[in-house]
Image 1 (cartoon, rainbow, N blue to C red):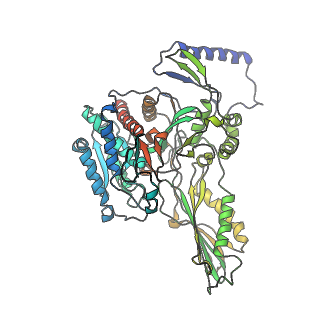
Image 2 (image 1 turned 90 degrees about the vertical axis):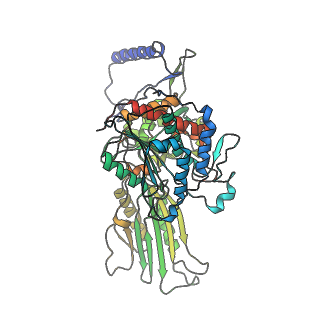
Image 3 (image 1 turned 45 degrees about the horizontal axis):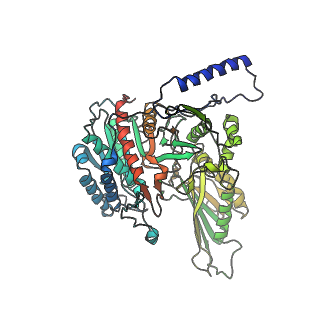
Length: 635
């Protein structure tokens, strides 16, 4: 692929460069001083890397809907709706029943009844269908059936609140408390009852304003996204595919990214999206799935050790998991006073240490949507701002470290850029000036986390072993969480583990049995590598950051946040959209609110600001109208 000219490339004629520079300067001046401006500021950025394989997506014009959302007169109503949703416990646990009609899920009858009572206009005028008992699909039929529908998603369930953490909450987790600063507290308010209530509120407001869609609007609410035991989203998606066909949906919106403020001195609208399987589009954002491996180890004639990368129930927030369990049984059972040279825990520790010492490599490629975000970072690092109000032209000084900026400027040095982004941390040389560091929810979203966007991640999350202080451990178990990069594959991960564990196993005189193979019948000492069930999940596909759906998405977002840059982003989590990838290439995971208005998702003191909830309603209110105004009819 082509990149910027290198230093040894043929030099262009200087007079051509001069003519181009003059013409470019005149065109920029014309944009600034001759064209009308619909927003307070107009941004330009010098594209000095136009020969790179990708670039920052086009920044479309804001799309103002015909019916404006005016929440001020009903803000208390919107907040009370959200409070009521929080007060109904809809926790989902690992290991829950796989049948949606099981009495364990009866809590969702109460939640559905609350929705019917709270939004009588919506449920009286939209068609309601049930899937897997508690999965809800609402259809607002459009007048033009030739137009591809739009799907708005959310899920009814929440992660649990462990009993031992309840006292640590500032306000009770299921009270739906609203404090004097405007924060709404409670489990699930951030993930994702805020989104669900916002979507229903927006539809209610549009209906009562007399809006009648040409394009069908579908609201899809699963009830086991956090656990995945029933797969209600899959049931809804299968129905929609049977009814409308593959690639039949205009766009899908689900929970995901948000609006990042003062990130490298800019405001960013950063959706996470996925691509239909089999496509090769590069522009967009992906989410990480989960996979699993199993290892069995038999090191001694008198004992057996099983090191297994076993399949575990994977929460959507941890979509790519590999677990390791090691079982070590000595025959006959030996006391601690007569230990073996290496116990099961000792061997497991050696293997885990080797795994952590050799993390997956980082890479920046055109196939990774984070590369587009990086291009936007570089392109808009020095931005010319023209205020139509004050009539002033200013240029903001760049904040990206020069070494990183240069490395991003040519594809041949993207490996250097990937390393720099992965290595940066608040304690190291920062890739931005200290004043521009940004923490969202107490977590640095760029520094020191670049590797999670640029490689398959790995984290040893659980270790167990031994039951008594004076008895040798018979079992040792560890779970390593992996999220598969868009530049990686299950096959490559298998190859790395094989190459890594072979020399480690040799230290204990163990042979290695490869994935998919059975150990010899007479073998008693070996390391066995397996994938439970014989399958693993690859990284999910990527949605293109262009086309009609992208224009509607970005234009709607710029209507609410006119000074923002809209750029694709990579999510390391997963949602119910994994079941919808055959319906459309345009899947945008976006919450329609500022990240600063959402705190502590999935943990103690989860909360959302009232202003954030209002923004979420307004964004859905606008995107329904803007999608309706577009004439895309499907492929």
